[in-house]
Length: 215
Ligand code: MD3
Ligand code: FE
Image (spheres, rainbow, N blue to C red):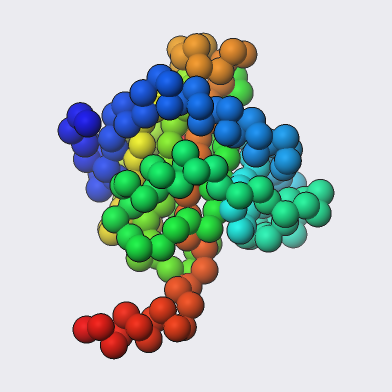
């Protein structure tokens, strides 16, 4: 495996997945989307986001006029499908923690889609990292500090890259400025899929006690 790169406290592993593993993961995501179709989230103010979303795992992240939150079901009422084994394997290899993710958020970027600078802070245990997997077209990723308005750094994320946001970077502002649409042939009609893996809940009390007794 190649060396990792540090971008403002985010650890990026360029080319973590080879072409075959990327293609297999896309097939796994197609199956997720067949069970839990992509939808277009709206901000609480009623603005449509340019990214389409779905999820796998115990929880999915949804946003609509009621606000944004984790939900145990897809807007259609079905359970989210399980997180594919190929995706779980990446988390287990890079997260450095003993819990499995409870949400695999699937973001689908078409031509012109972007994601504004934001923090991910809807999860209860911020000691748990977020792991991101990029598939398809290259995307200009920007990361800043915990405070809004500070300096930012940018890096192109490419298909197969894995990023780990832990420690101080967990609350860093970040976003996707733009895609190089059509830069990858992984998705036949172009675009980008980003998977973000998250632990949503606080660790169960029984596990907390166990952890305390061990020290
Ligand atoms: C840095 N997604 O879903 S992934 C998101 O490419 C999100 O779709 C972007 O931001 C995407 O919330 C960026 C990389 C990422 C994810 C979470 C982070 C970077 C992060 C949390 C803290 C700091
Ligand atoms: Fe985010």
